[in-house]
Image 1 (cartoon, rainbow, N blue to C red):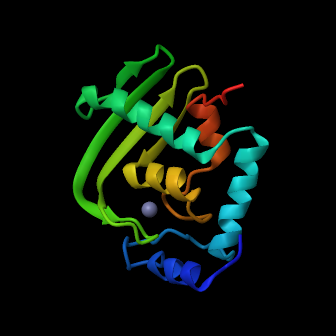
Image 2 (spheres, helix red, strand yellow):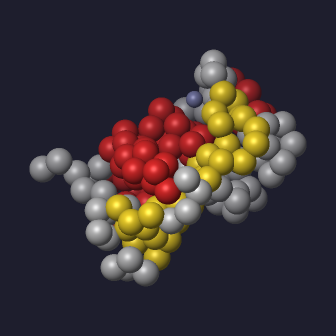
Length: 155
Ligand SMILES: [Zn+2]
């Protein structure tokens, strides 16, 4: 992916204090296009798409809503907790619409590992293939998501 003037503008939205306190890029020295390309390569190597990952994140979130802020068991292998905090965030890529601050925590009971993601994370992954920069508090490693949420491609 080429770093375009538009990407530069998006990168400016991702700086600390513009949309979120800590921003989206952490201490990552790479430009936005390079970050997206690197994660895209990981996901493709594992035979998946960003859409499949985002769909699984939303599926587990939807299942977890019933817990009303407490962990509930889903699909026997997972415990999921969904809680909301006040406030909404816009997409840094300039989409219309805003995203409620909803955190989903998924525990994989078999692996004894867990991961937390926001509603904005699943949007950024599904629509933009963006997992945030290294060192960002909400950075998600595609490999961790795929393992912990047990995401499998359609063969
Ligand atoms: Zn967007």
